[in-house]
Image (tube, rainbow, N blue to C red; front, side, top):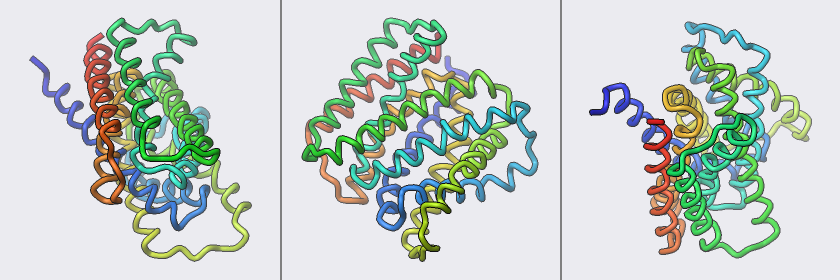
Length: 289
């Protein structure tokens, strides 16, 4: 029988997938009003504002120096790459490419730490990748150089998320969730702010529609989601927790269809079903290993 703690973290897992699925919707909406760096930095800014009151009553992480490495891997670099991708790819594509994180995590842990995945996990990441190929390779987009570069940028963001999950487990496993979330975000803001100032020719006038999307993206899909993510990461470990990104395409595609009028094909449906199966297998196998 599953414990209350386990069921509680499963609920957090599902909520996190839903919020991250929504993030691709608001990325698409906000990308119409902001440049790449401003979009990433604005997202981080609103997340920091949301987390600041909670951070004031939390314990500051002891591994202070490594927080800039975490901020770079978990926020600054992937947010910039994802912001660029959002200007060229539909929400469903963004969410699906992001689901490569479990496969990357398994490979990185195998190469650098000698962690051998179970046969069940190896099978799961393979069929999960097949699902990703089905959705990305057979979706309603015409191939172009611009689309190809956007896909590469999105894959780069997935690599960053994978490395950051492993980074947290090795350096910040016993730290406060609130402090870890806030400090990783504020360090990434410090990294991106000078770049943002240099790349802006003049102070831009941001329309309210764009700010609304950016605020929701920062507060709920980033600030709140970070708290949930670090909780899941600490409870289940890097491989099982990274499988949340397998569930994100279900929500990302659904929200894209409902709110943005994006197209869903039978190939995308099959790909999402395959990804869902992979998510269940890898989650059960790794979280109980």
